Amino acid sequence: MSKKKILFIANHRLGRSPGQRFRFEQYISYLEQNGFYCELSHFISEEDDKILYSPKKWLNKAKLARKAWDIRKKDLARANEFDVIFIYREALLTRSTRFERLFSKTKAKVVFDFDDAIWLPNVSAANQRLQFLKNPSKINKILPLVDLVFAGNQYLADYAKQFNQRVEIVPTTINLNYHRTKAFEKEKNQICIGWTGTQTTLRYLDELIPVFKKLKNRYGGKLKLKVICDTPWISSEIEVDNVSWSSADEILQLDEIDIGIMPLTDDKWSKGKCGFKALQFMALKKAVVVSPVGVNAEIVEDKKNGFWAKSSEDWFRSLSLLIEDKMLRKSFGENAHKTIKEKFSVDAWKAIYLKQLNELIEKK
Image 1 (cartoon, rainbow, N blue to C red):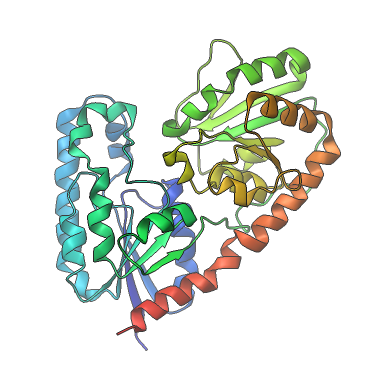
Image 2 (image 1 turned 90 degrees about the horizontal axis):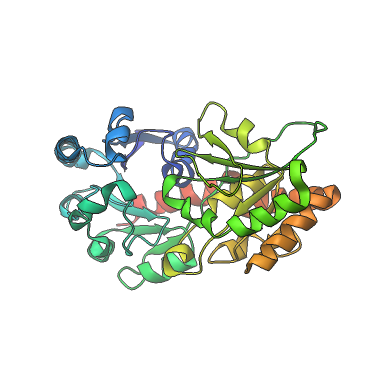
């Protein structure tokens, strides 16, 4: 019996992008165990990464765009060899929808997966001058073309259903075999509040600076603030332990954190977020405090597996309670892990994921 073949279309190499990792990469081994051949086509190498997210370097960025175009042409030329073309967010970084349109005309069924409100403008600081090359509303042209849409939450699904009725909610999920906390808790002198993310989401920490200052004044050296990111978060007002994200020690770095935070602003872009920061902390049995925006309010049940914080006063009160009460941290952490296992783990969703793809292929 021949294997079913999926070509994943995405920007980054395996293991580089949090979105790719949590949306489809961690399902690849399960798919392969169940009769699928999986292949990823990407165009941003490790060297390209440094170019893409650096200011200027216009010529090099133009060469990267040309490279991406050439790779997608090759993908298109062999698209009929695959049962499924799985597009994560977009085929190209520019405003073009050419390849999505042409993929839809091949023999392969096309899946479109997205985990952000990508119909809204959102350009990295390093590429503001290239904003004219982007067209966020291109998703409105892509959605009607595809055979199946995977949306990361209800807010995204509701948007997609304006253009395509074949929409399934597939939440961002956690592999609990990878996210494993240490077997015992070492005695330590500090309580660590932590955040993890990318440079594009660092801005959410800015509004918490007054809260961090008040906490530092109250708890002094007992408190540590840790930020895991590809870019340091610099504040002249508070001391921060900045740690560069690395796949080699990702879990070790996350596991040092006692209280995980996920602040968001209450806007349309934030409502499209799929909560992966909170999910990671909760999988490692960490107490969390989150802004109850979008899916965060579904993942975290206030006062049971974490705290909601809508104001500076909420943030200060919730974090203070968790800093002072070790048993509360432990209780929230245990409840949080249970939530992930039952509702947001790869094990909870992998059979559904496989079923959706099989049914799509079998559908005439």
